[in-house]
Image 1 (cartoon, rainbow, N blue to C red):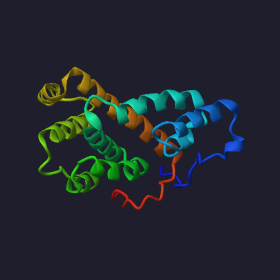
Image 2 (tube, helix red, strand yellow):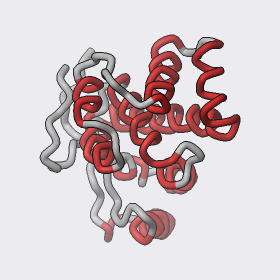
Image 3 (spheres, rainbow, N blue to C red):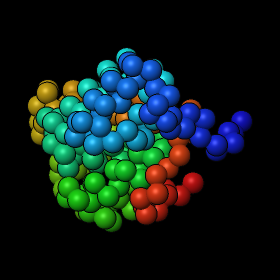
Image 4 (cartoon, rainbow, N blue to C red):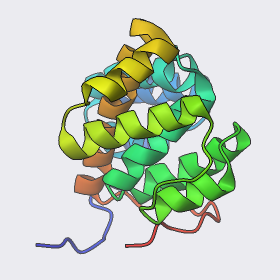
Length: 188
C-alpha cells in the first residue's frame, strides 16, 4: 500500500523542541553537517536515538577506513537499493565531488552496472550490491574487499550499508521531503 507522499514528520520549529531535543539538534548544527536536515528531521522526535545515530554516521561518512570517495559510492548504492531520494539528493553530488565519475552515478541511478570503475570502486559496488540484494556477500567478493581494505575497511563498509539502510528506512517511513538541491531524482 503506497503512502500519500506527505511528509509525516516534518521539521519542528526550534521553539517547540524540548531541552533534550534542542541539545541534540545543536550538536548536529555545530558539527560537520552544519544543519538539521534529512534523516535528522524525523529523528529529532527521539533525541537519544538521533544522537547515537549521528555519532555513528559522522564517523562512517567523514572518517571511515575506506575514505570519503568510496563511502559516498556505498551510500549511493544503498540509496538506490532503498529508492531513497533524500539520500540520493544529498550524496550524488558529493560522490562526484569526491571522485566518482558522473557516468557511474547515472548508471547506479538507472539500476545499471557502472562501466569502467576503478578497481577499489568496483569492489565496493559489488560488495554493496551483494549485501543489499542477496543479504550476504560471496567468498570471492569478500576476499577482494578484504585484500583491498583490510578487516577494518570491510567492517566499515558493512557499517555504511547498515547505517544508510537505517536512515533510508526512517526517511521512507516518515516520507521525508526531498531537499531542493537541484539534483534529478532517481527514476522509479
